[in-house]
Amino acid sequence: MQALSEPLSPFVPWSSQDRTPLQEAEVPAPAAGSQPLLVDLLRDPSAITARLLDPARLQGLVLGSAGIIAGCTSFFAAAASIARGKEAWWGSAALTSLNVLMSLAASLGPIYATGILLAARVPLARLVAAMLAATATGSLLLAGLASPLYLLTRLNPEWAGPLMLTSSFLLAGAAAGARIHRLLSHMAETVTCQALGEATAKLSAEDAFRVGILARISWMVLAFTLALGFWAFNALG
Image (tube, rainbow, N blue to C red; front, side, top):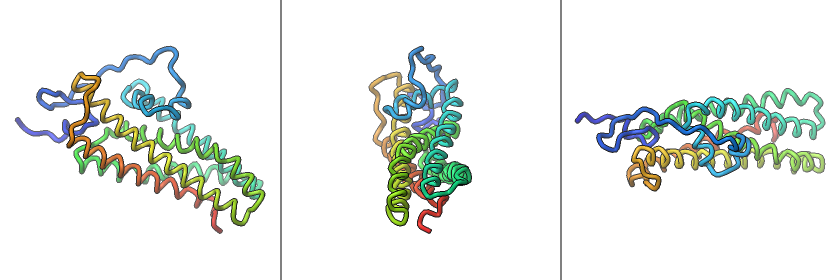
């Protein structure tokens, strides 16, 4: 039998009999009492994984996550700018949101290429959605740190404010990186369970090794690019 690289990816449905690609399995419609996206972003990754594997909800996940990123980063930027006595806060808000989206674009290429090299390619639409969801989780943390940032900047604009600003982006980047690590790992396990038809199926040692490398690289790249978001404020200047 001719070997194909595509079925080897743990992120693509495959047949356990001959390792050939399968059509996407139908995902049951969400229950009427399903949680909103904002709640799912703060819950266990299984809630977001269900959205990633459901083609009907994938677009909603992308648009919702992008909206949360824009709203939370703009709120944080506005709080930082007002605390520093700047009336034109909308410039920093727009620049910060744009900077985060540019960070995502910069992260996408290395992560996708790593998946190809490891024969663990994530379908591009799902990878983009997963990265947006992870970044949205980090953005929610960023919005929560707006109040401490405002207070510290008012108390000490020379040291405490800039340090808190930089630390906030470092924490948000670390949270987003940890989230993409968990999402990729859980997605691979879920796809494998669906392919084998067993709810308790586990990744093989080889697949777990490749998925682990991809998840760690994704964590590092996404966390690093997002953590540099403080440059939009010229925080250390």
